[in-house]
Image (tube, rainbow, N blue to C red; front, side, top):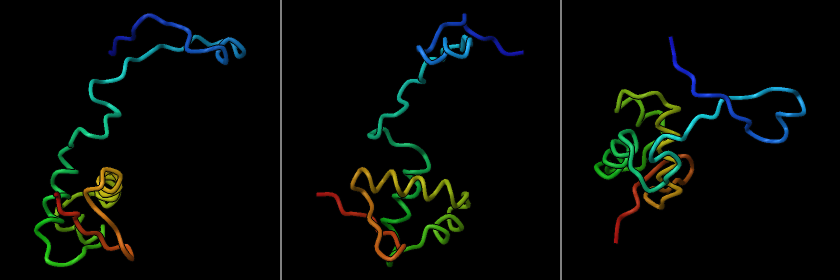
Length: 96
């Protein structure tokens, strides 16, 4: 059985439908784009070692990870400026 914190109102829209929803705190580090994750670290390392641009599916097969998870990690790396895509082929951006 799971424990639920005391119920609090989330916003004015909830009072219109008569619901009180539980408020859940954000986990530490959530939403911080600078914090590396394991998948992102593995994807970045594989891109750095690759001798040619890779497609997300090929990278997912090589790392034995779901393609959607690898694609999401690639997008996060792209947002951080650590990877780039051209014709759906990904490369690591060199630091410095």
